[in-house]
Image (tube, rainbow, N blue to C red; front, side, top):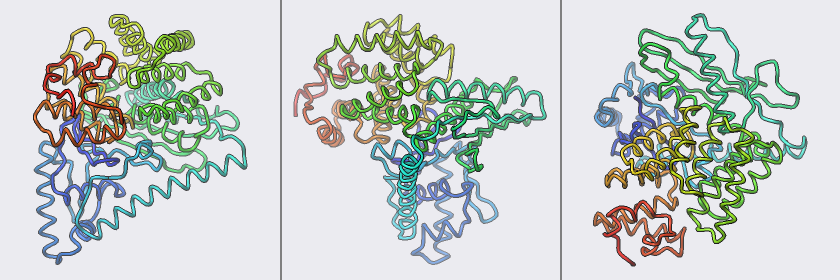
Length: 529
């Protein structure tokens, strides 16, 4: 297993179960950030010392550096070999500490987050460096938008985005076979999650802009090594890459959780590039709509529905209809639609049409499971659909999420929490992982694991500080545990984004707090403030 270092929003260093290994001191956290954003994730000791202890003498700075490295290793515990110190250089082993890439147009920035927004290192040189990193991101995003607007005015609509999975012939038969399987799984995810065309090299449609993805694999003893590289085909411009080192037991590890995460992460990076370069294509409109849906803001969700409709008009794909049903279920849960019959009819129509168009698509089946659960309260039928989705794609985090929800409805609480944890891990690469964090918070509440529920709720809030579900449940959790200051802090933010909120709503059968109402925690929440 590995640790994931996240830099957008509050800095986080966690394992697959959400356990934090982040150091407490700001200087140690600052060192992690300096390494994470460095080329090849390595820097000379002197370079680090100048940005973290610029106000101290060279000897004092060296001593502080040694203490900082000792602290980092202590907090990393079993993962301490992920920090490399040799030959006057400090580096991160990305096979142990994986860095979540920071993109100029990462949807998390549009959700109001910032690079390392909770980092406060008391050193002028470090602050200047971090301000410069933040400014470069914003300037790069502005330039990208200007280029897209200029291209649109000069050349009409953006070119259709197409992905090619580079064809190459590894020496070993085992590696050659695995490359084909890996490419097949990636092509499936791009089709199901992003409605993106994948074509062989040499068969690119006229007027298309090509993203090329190449994966290299080899086995060394009991370890399988995988490297994925993405570039712009026209000029071989580097866009993104990632590496995995996985222990194997027999066959190549395509079903290993880490390999499934790598495939999902690659698909997510491709989708981010499409949104950045082809915002007005059907796929680009689709990705923009997703960001708006997960904000849970009613006006934004209505804009998302328009974007999905436009995407379907450009390219009639079943997945766009599935997401329109997902959007309506979210509206029903979060904003208590007055015309439920009309909304349920629209949901059923979208699901029926999408299943006819592409009933072998795991995303279509997963969204159909959610709709079945919401519109008909049929946990058995919904679970059957979600299981079929997993049979088609075991790496689909949405399918695992809806399995978890069905298991909660059926009283299988332990199984539900296990499914939710798996879904969250598979979704780590997405910019909407807070949705799965919140699901784990709910399943933890169902098991009366309050500390875990708070941890997952705070993880969701860290990604999106205005996320309503996290705020309302954290308010209730802190109240139930007799922590009024923390409860009041979450309540104040909640009332800013939801002005009509009052604690008595948590007991309202129509309010989205069913998990809380079904737990004994509700008895400890005040009726009003």
